[in-house]
Length: 190
Image 1 (cartoon, one colour):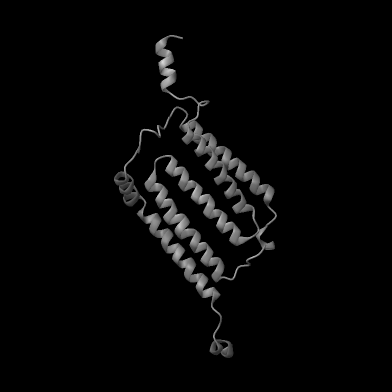
Image 2 (cartoon, one colour):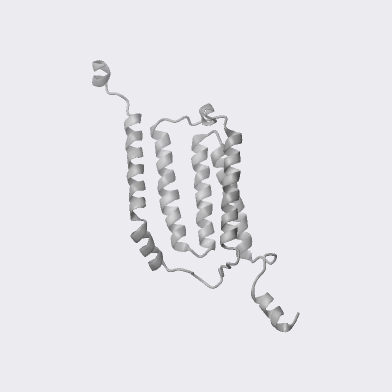
């Protein structure tokens, strides 16, 4: 090898020489995956919702490590702050069982595990194939600006966000209606 090839190899980090950010990224990813697995395998509905908070928080940390601060805060505000709180309120308002729920297991664990592994394998294969030669330099700074991200979100994704908010509001109103006890007049009329 000559000097030029050595300098080119040293300038481009390889797979076997991870940086501190890459190590933290992998560790947070493993913790996020573990929280997601516990979230879907536990029989306690409230515990599942709380483990979902941990998993979604881990995704927000991954965004921070990729220098996408705006998306990380959107993740925290919308998913952790709104969706999970709505799920917890829905559980409380519908008087779902707090302890272990025998109805939470449908007995399809083998089929669900097979579909989950196949989906994860397909996703990993597609991402690796699509970004095989792409390197993200996290030390260089932000890749996109908040202005560009906001324009894309509010130009192309406003309708799905609004549809989701209406759906969540309808679910909350439905939970309140289902949780109401009939009044004495209504119970006497029936």
